[in-house]
Length: 174
Image (cartoon, rainbow, N blue to C red; front, side, top):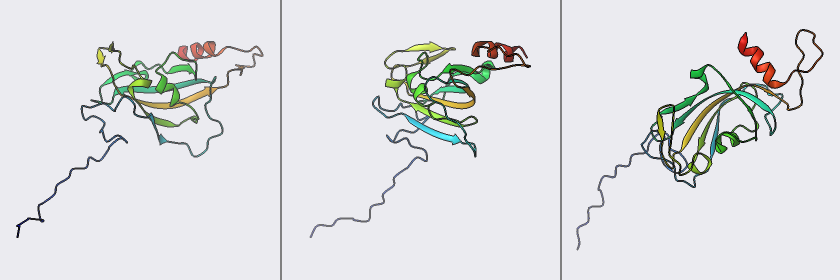
């Protein structure tokens, strides 16, 4: 008769915060290049009367960091200047844009962007931080203002419409 020890101890470590691919943020690894974008709502106001959609001009704050090591490479907050962006117009990381749809004013999100929706196989340096080839990106976002593409604004009883860019420069001078 063969003697088998069936009572061998089995130790398995399960990290607390895993992505759907099993890679933990800050673990020194990126998500697989074909991973799906992940959009988490971290705060949602009790009431939401309107949501963001393609063509709306958004004002938001964001912090961008590398998934691999949590290193921050960009932040509108540190510049003390919000990003003003027309949703769906391009000019920002594709995955960042995708994560901004259907947001409410006051809502906060964490958007995990796989490399194919980020900078892909390109390596670049931004604000002194090297963004390596195949980098997974994290964007923490807070939407604080949005307006439809065609809305005109009246200030102090002035009946003429003022363009969005004029409004931003007025607020930034206050």
